[in-house]
Length: 349
Image 1 (cartoon, rainbow, N blue to C red):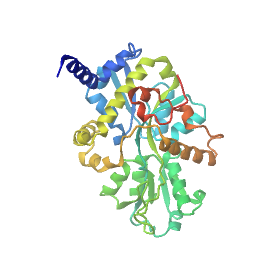
Image 2: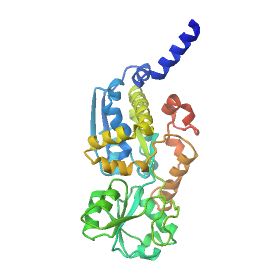
Image 3: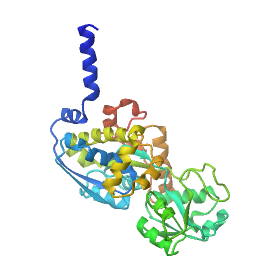
Image 4: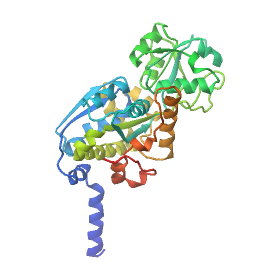
């Protein structure tokens, strides 16, 4: 191999291993080095945890990382607008609703498709045919993605959503109410369905996992009622006031997301997040296949957001329907991996 070829080879090798910290610094000094992240209790936060635990956020220039835990996306969204957190990681209904109601927020990534709001019921609930769903009380958090899922569930089986007996509860309260038989079912996200199904305090089963039914009348059939994605949301002010900080944060999280998505890292990542969240490894191992950590702006992304936009419009919660790409910024991803921007966002800093 001649010297020119060796030089080219070395240059390519170095390019492949340049850390995100170097990329981040190319954008200039970080305007803000203290980072506030909103957290939940499920595996969708694996990229955040990996970025923290492997020191990649520190490499990118962040000197202090603070986290706040929320059990609902809406509460975390309010914290984002108030400037109490810098990054919000909700399902899609709360940010769609907030943007339509004038809140200056921007979706900058899909953390993972998460069609996993699950319908969990007590085994003694007496659900034998679709009409039985009208005779039970169903817990869910109003205004969350579960509100859209319950309507899709009713529509799927020809029921009137207004006749569903919905009880507004946060996920921890749903568990207590299910155990006490104050409700006979709930619809929510991980880890609560797993905790209910494995609980010694109640006999419960998952009768729909968001995409496949396990109801007695159509068990095993594909029937998608969830169109939820875990998305990463920044405020417009954060992006414009701290452009280098926002860029460094996103490039670092994209790197962590790709690490999490690699099957070769599964065992390590599951162990890492379990320790960080103080959860059993077997719990997160059981839930892991619910997530793909794909980050791509494509037709499926638009379809999923339009589905919940339609739900919010039909239910009278928004007065008009905005194009999801009008509040989607794809600039960070276009820099990181342009092939993942199939449809370009219309929002610009």
